[in-house]
Length: 72
Image (tube, helix red, strand yellow):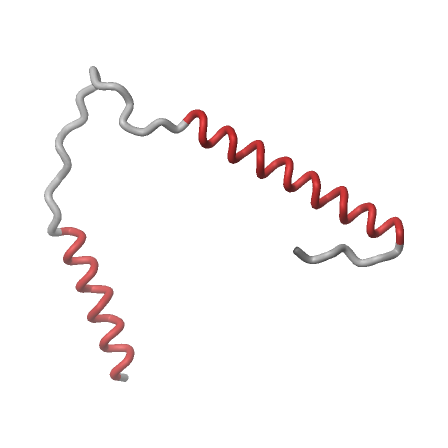
């Protein structure tokens, strides 16, 4: 019961501390975008797709040879 009480107290404390923060200043539409999201996300998606294709090919190759695929 003590663990539950302490956990609940901690979660409620975090929620209260998060709500007590000041609001950020309003965004000015004339300013440039504060977060560059184009280049990094594109590279991560391409790398993830390439890794997925590699895993599928390795799995099919191992299945055709009658082996189990290696776990990395």
